[in-house]
Length: 63
Image (cartoon, rainbow, N blue to C red; front, side, top):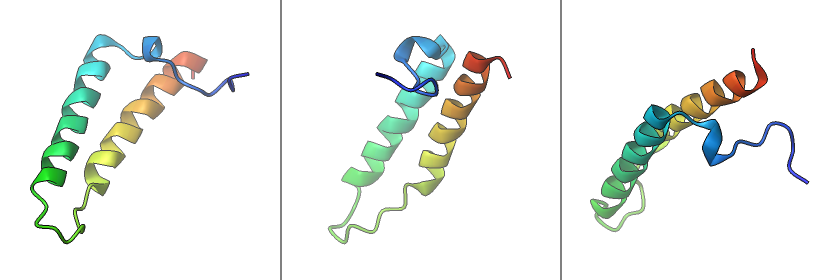
C-alpha cells in the first residue's frame, strides 16, 4: 500500500516533469564526463530535484 506522501508521475506539472528530465540528463552527462575516478559531484542537481519533489508534495497535500 503506498504511503500518503508518495508521489506519482501525475502529481507533477508538465513544467516540473521537463525540469526533472533535464536535470537527470545533466546528471548523466556529468557521469559520462567522469575520468574514471568516480568522484563526480551530483549533489547540487540532486538538491534541485528534491526541491521540485517537495514543491509537488506540498501542492498534493494542499499546504
